[in-house]
Length: 569
Image 1 (cartoon, rainbow, N blue to C red):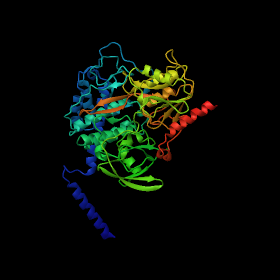
Image 2 (tube, rainbow, N blue to C red; image 1 turned 135 degrees about the horizontal axis):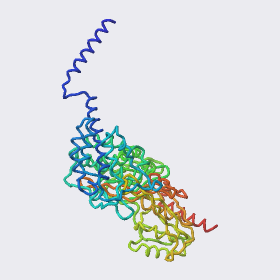
Image 3 (cartoon, rainbow, N blue to C red; image 1 turned 90 degrees about the horizontal axis):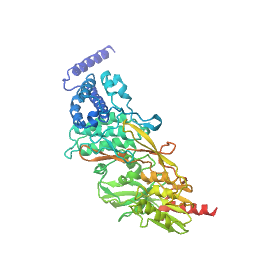
Image 4 (cartoon, rainbow, N blue to C red; image 1 turned 135 degrees about the vertical axis):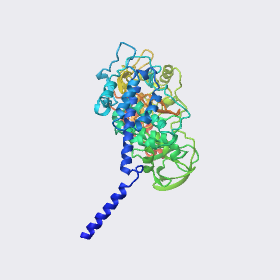
């Protein structure tokens, strides 16, 4: 035993000797991790300080300083700073921006508490241990921002419902994201725009602040446009906002392939993907249940795609995940389906074109068998919406019931305003919209949206009305449903809507691309959540595999049956 003990002692000494001889430039992994961790912490603080200052300091609001140039100059200095140096560097920079003077004797004011919904967490500004006493004190001197000329500010607000406008942001088509500074500029621009102008941070599954710490290392590891955009896709997927997408390119196509199976799909109540419509030559058939893509279970394919695609929740995947699901890098792909209880595998030739299932109907409105009127909102002519809707309702005035199909996207987003004038005697609040505060970034102001009710230019339609809805009902269709369902004799039939509503804004990115995201919140009249969970129908109906196979519209059939039942009472 003594000999063994001596041998162990000798080996330990040898190990210590080799460890102590590691050259200074070849530190052990733990040391590297410490350095990298410090860099990430420094950059995280820089992102937050720069972003809050960007949207609040008069030097940026009046365009006296270039906020991007200031950041690009700071990144290399802050990146390599020691932990006890960062606050002094940032405070020195903050002071260099000049006096906090908004050029008016009228101070800004915070929104009334009862009318405000606070989204951004800015408590870190009060934390002297985090920022240092001097920087914390000086940053607290900013805002609330008074009413000022925002023509040169990083964000201004449209007159229509106060939607934030970022169009002044700098872009450069020569930007290739090959440098850390370019990629960090893009990441910090996106993170702060979301932090202060996205209305649904409170219903995320994780903290937006925690994601910053997670994605700084990932953006540092990126190397070009595609890897940068994929990283942004992965981060914004956590928003679960279907409005989120790149405008000029869809980087996920480069990963999953440009070839798409020429089919449209629906999802059943059980979450099965079912072929509903063929868009070209294809051996698949309506009613086929999708099981596998190139030998991979379709559920696994879902999970792989969801990493980069922002979906409302795990129950609502058709939009936008459906356009990425049956994709391949090869023109020929193998798709396994369940057909008539038997598993079959087919070779399917992909296409680079995509035809949505919700194609425009030929008629804006018609009278079905049984004297029931049908309105197809996606086919209403544009122009004078009030006149168009008035003519439609006059044509359907003597019908015994009315179906409004809001599985379609209205050709005019104001359609619901004029249509509601025929469906209820007295107008009522149908939802609450929250719009960004111009004084306090990160705070949203409540606005009541009120339907019209019958006017001298309309008439009261007293027969039963059914509004059709399913998980393809998104954005303005959901907004329209909330308005129309307040009608006196209206029911909503179908299945839960997608859960993505509110005006969209565009954030230009450094290389000239752009990112869309929701910038106004939509709630029920009682301030109940709609984002991510969708609107629930009054009468729940789902398509079935058999119905799809037979080419039936089971929701419309159920609507007709409901109207007939009501009239028989």
